[in-house]
Length: 315
Image (cartoon, rainbow, N blue to C red; front, side):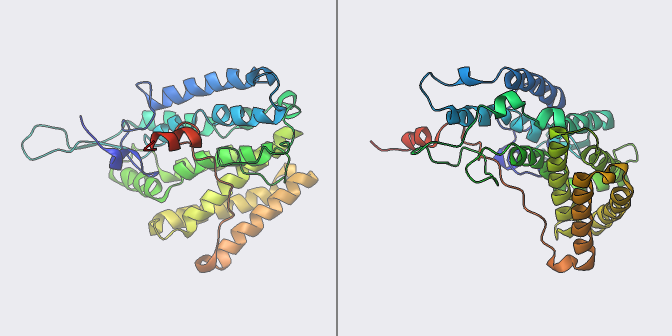
């Protein structure tokens, strides 16, 4: 079987076996395996991950690829949901042409993807946060580090929001949402967009826990809301898709207003912000601009900028 980069690279691509930087035979299983490895890596992460004599701030350089080590398997698993198995078939060549995917496989992939947005996956331990100071003189921020909203200080909440956004932007890509809707219309055994949206919203807006868990949950919820509203406002989303997302957002408003967690000042403020965002979309969809989430480091090509540039050098 041959398929090219045009099938592998787009964020909304659909073939369940055409991926970049890929290992394993099942994208959902491999994503779960990578998350298990990542959990161990982050649990053991600390000052021994940099050389003696290096500024402690350099921990961030090493942390970023470890924190985002699951990103390529996240992309791979997302293609299973609303995916389509196909070949570059020609008439009478005997190849299969197209095939919808096993519904149970798609739901397994969805569960693995939502695991990447849970507090347990996004939160960094206090023992690590206390070891990453602002960068010293001469060690400037560069594109391989996370973007921050905390000036010079390391920003674990923006890091969590960015990581959650990597997943939600794939799950709620207009092309993927359109396919999920279409495939269910063709075969009722296929996962419905109704079900997928319920699982995403239920996961992103659980509103429990305490302390840093709450702050990280809010970061994930913010990323989810940004992508939900972006899908609802997208010109690339089909009308039934946009209508269903709007319906779910209206129901989310009611849930947030009545949430028992709203008795907590932080949750009350966050819920008010979410409701205001949804109202802005409803009142003026043509001019609505979704809240922006800070982008992740580029990731590809794998390696430092200096190394990559040297590969292209004529010296």
